[in-house]
Amino acid sequence: MKAWQDAASLILAARHGQTYSRAVSPAVHNYQLLCLKRHQKSSFMPGLYVFPGGTVDPADANLKWREYFATFGLDNDRLVSLVPRTARTPSRPQIFRSRENELLREVSLRITAIRETFEECGILICRRNRDSGAPAGWAEHVSIPEDELQTWRTKVHNDATEFFNLCRKLECHPDLWALHEWRNWLTPTTTYDKRYDTAFYLTCMPYVPHAEYEAVEMEDLKWDTPERLCSTGITFPPPQQCEIARLTKIKNIDDLLDIAVERDREGMQFYLPVRMLMKDGVVHVLPGDTMYPKEVSLLEKQVIDKSEITMDELARITPVKNRMEFLDTRFNIIFTDNGEDNSVVFPVPGKISKITLGNDEPRNKL
Image (cartoon, rainbow, N blue to C red):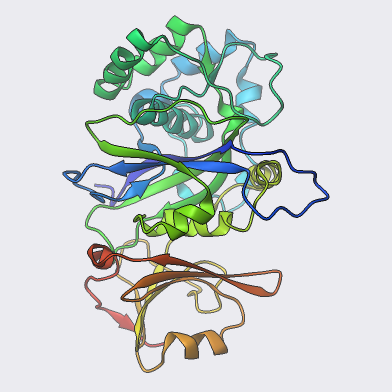
């Protein structure tokens, strides 16, 4: 039995505010991110805010999608174009390993993210034709009459195969090329009993679309800037915190889209946090950090014991940082960019402490 479930999630950024000149360094964000609050009765991350997304369903990889895309002039070569340049190298994350008689994972994971986004907030990221006039790289969405929307969301929630039927009825197709590879996060063994290998995509929309949360799994929906999401005291899982923290440094949605398109060409990087015990708290180190192990275990608990020094002492002896610091009252997301250390602080309610606590054995002295 596989040790985790495969999933896909969507970081949805929508323009909200003025269009900036590329020559100007803006002071405030001109876009907002979509976040949903998981229901308190949820079996995984109850009460936390997340990006829309969910687990892969076999229906997302059904080969009938390939035939359907062809009716829009999107042949197999066009679908293969979604595979980034790095796909032939060992660095390609394992979530993209396709199986026999299935769509390419680069296609099916995008379908998962689009389907789950529709289920959870009613935004259908689809196109009706290739030459729609929309700017390249930006996402479109198809509107559904209000009296039909909830019916279809319920159908798709109960049976993922209904998403194909919805697209066929509306004569539209999932807007795959508007979803750009961002990052691949695997839940560490030291965090939850349930683990997910999640492909995070990023998409940009030219305006904030209407959205309503799905009341079975969610209990709130929020649009806000990355900066405000850091400071308002709402609670996110660590992957979302890291992504939001990095987006605080990108104010202009046009710049964000450029970065996403370039990252899409290179392919997403695999992130498995490794826990480090400190004198004054817990640190999760990420790839690129000076302290990140050369070899990591996907299945065994891996904890580095540095409990003889503090986080500040660790910071002074590590030139390159990509880490999450967990303290009693806050999370610090610290990353080195162009030789400069950046720190983004999230206030932490007490209930989140279980995310950082767990079985500390075995320990590795490094």
